[in-house]
Length: 121
Image (cartoon, rainbow, N blue to C red; front, side):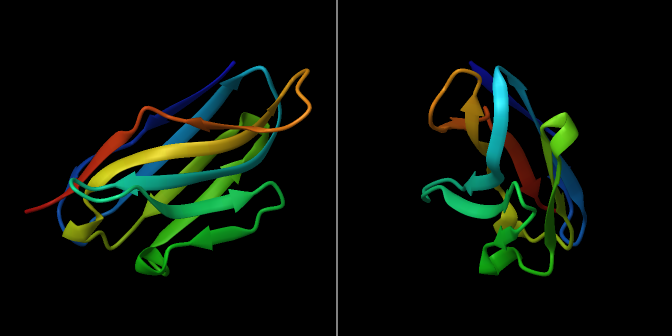
């Protein structure tokens, strides 16, 4: 089994910064992709950013130029640096990973428990 544990959420004023971390643990052979989704109240969950094992990032248009995703493959950890935060960035942020577990043929998708990010005065 694989677990994803997020940290780093909180309350920040508009224009501020936060850094989210997501650590994957368990029976991991390799991680194809790690990323972040978010879900605001009354809205669907949406992709914020993700990164392949080769290091290619993808960003939602709404966060381009403000958010940066990075990975430490040795630690099975992903980070999301969020700068110039706006009230509309307020949401629960979920880590997501596509993992090949030891002894598995294909990959499976895993989710973290979510961490609240609130941008407000």
